[in-house]
Image (cartoon, rainbow, N blue to C red; front, side):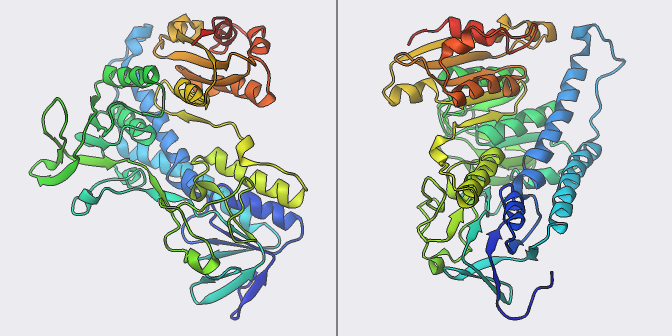
Length: 461
């Protein structure tokens, strides 16, 4: 469709072609609406371009290198250790991302009723947006603008990497310092260690991924340290300075040297929403202190006719939650449903190897919510699949409400944990008692076969 010179009126405008944008456009146009989809960079959003797709492709390459080094443990003798061709590794990751992006683009190109507008959007009124020198209007506006990596103030004059820019590396750093001991940082730490870099993880808190229960944090630290990754927690004064060998990272800790020197530094201390350049005030929207757009349980903002989906609303920071935001909005708007964000059971994964699959509440969260609980923890050494693969690191845990028998949360840190956790997630979604899962008959030998045994071993917590 051609873009006119004067203001153009659409039935709906979507700002951002990330995970929620294209499917929402498809659903709206299928209902006969004219839709403008605005994107200032690449279609597909974070996941396709600099998130899940390229990074998990890199994780796969790193795992191959790791398994190759362990080949002799399985009776497979290789003549020499693996050689990392980082140009090919990077090219494969970017190629997979480019292919995914091309598929999204082709989908949008063939969508009748859709106008894809390239450029930066900002509000000029509650139902008006300006893109370049053009102004467009709609009675329904959906914000799906995503988020970007946070930069530390002390890194302004030092060349540091983010989870996006590190994808540009075509070599393995000699020594990589990862600032931030949470999900993104730990994935890159293990990945580059397996590619051959010396790696140190520097975390301000007293333990890694502090939102998890302590035993999970400790198990993850043991996995990483077992591969030769140095971990420094309690880093209360992180700073940077130029050094002849790269970058000097100031680390004031209870123990250890006050400084470390790295050739490269990855800053992975969180993400911030892309809401600061939308002129939200013109639309009557006031972001919270962190920049997120406040929404109600139906993802509606304070301004009628404007919704916020995905990372920018602070109600989830994952591809699957962004897609579910689309499902909620579409069902409520077009199907007469009453779906709510609060009905969503939180679930996510940490893609170190072995992976962490998490669903629902941690034990600490369940206690804080006032539940009388049953708990259980079992090591992966009891899982036949893990023993046969010689990958027995990790554990399974579960938390159950003692009064109702409802499963409140579970963790599987171990081989295929990101897949096996779905058996528990589905039971939670169905509202079933843990007894229902306890008497299931899973296939042997699998990771999931320990789950009924896990449920049978619950004890008052």
